[in-house]
Image (cartoon, rainbow, N blue to C red; front, side, top):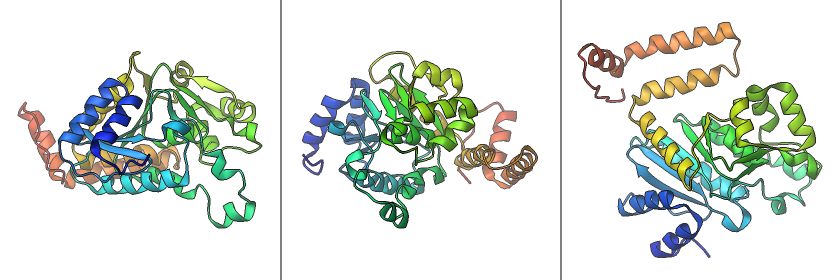
Length: 296
């Protein structure tokens, strides 16, 4: 059934799929009259001031990732990145699956010429270019492309039920959306090699111990989305200029030597002294009051 039907049908479907805290957030977004576009494979809502929540919505396929889904995800995130009222984004799935992998039915009959000439998967990584931070709230399965999608986000919060993995080797291929490259930065060569070559899954506890996720949230339905929205709200309450500079500095560490990264960080730090938010932030600290950001 298409989500392009009535709001009541969309709400009924979301109630069946989502935990009650997420449903309350969605109700709040629906009642706020935010005017968000309705998509087929994702739901976009505004659960808190300055926060946009994107929920993957292919329940029958356990949120399997497909080209149509990524087209919508890229469109939505691009619009939200340009929206001055949004300071941070949250990306989630369902309790059962964040995303259980790429859609194998879409891929199984493709040829080398097809995937090579049409740059298959290349546009699946566009969210890594967002200026604003994006938090992955992961429950259930995050396998293959689902694990890679979570790794593309800036921060990952995990439910105790989260299960990560890169099982592509079992299909006669390897990760194609950045799994081998991003995991190695988080967990090192040996673990990444093990996961890539054996295809074994790893738990939320392992992901936390290895540094794949920021933390595992307390157990409870919808808790991971609730915690992600809280974190996004905190980020959205800061100077948007400083937040974007901070994200840029951290990401630069992936591509630069330490010496280059330190110079880059320092230049960004120096540059922030040309902003009104730097003057306001430091003045507010000296005057023992809360800063009022104008994001310039």
